[in-house]
Length: 135
Image (cartoon, rainbow, N blue to C red; front, side, top):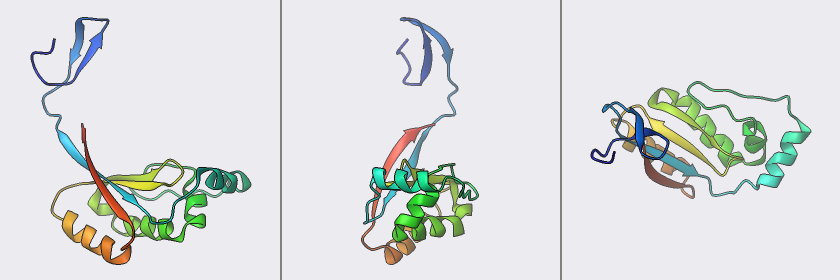
């Protein structure tokens, strides 16, 4: 069962139900963290006060807490608007949870450096975390 280091769906304890295809690979995901934090309790209180406002941008995941987080945290709003202006660079992007950060997955590697140079010039106190996922 563990002869190859490929992901598998296991049915029961020892039988392999489906072996996934070999075209999966490690991909980079970045987390942008604004310098100002969004307290979950505060964001939810703003959400409960106005559930009707909703935004959805191209290539962005759906998060009902987006509007309250953007209204509460100006830096988060500016980051989201920057990502929306550059949406063609991203396979997917979106706000995490109640707005502690924003994740981005680039379509390719060619624009990563120039995007982050612009990001750091606009948001010098924000931080960038890089990780990988298997997909």
